[in-house]
Length: 165
Image: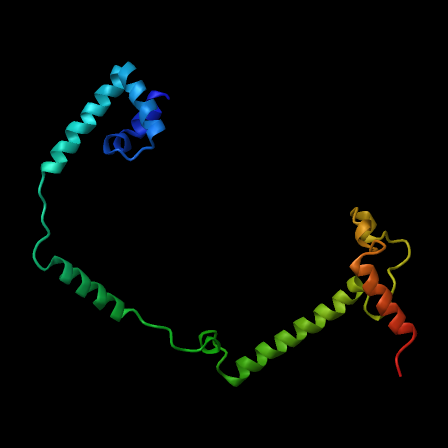
């Protein structure tokens, strides 16, 4: 171990909080390194002085702190309104506008996505490369034989060809 590692762990070493193997390694280093022994003795001297200092909490300190904390908590407003009111959607015009925006967004999403997902049986325009092949994902285009996906596609195709009465 190097001196920096030893000095970072001096407090735990002095308190006996280190595993035995690490304590032995540190003790060996301390036997051979005068600078680290000096740092340990300084740590012990400071610790002994700090242990002799007696501090006491003033009478009623804890109850005063707790009372003030409870007073501060009581002053904090609690949001009791529902989320539409907090967003300003509690009036009929605002609610209607939000519903209209949502409807337009869903409609545009469906219309714009129909080319991507192939809704309506529209094929990709000729001359444009297949996106799966262009991005090297052509292995995702077809399910391998014997896979669960291939079995599902076989069942779906059979159901489309021969619908039950």
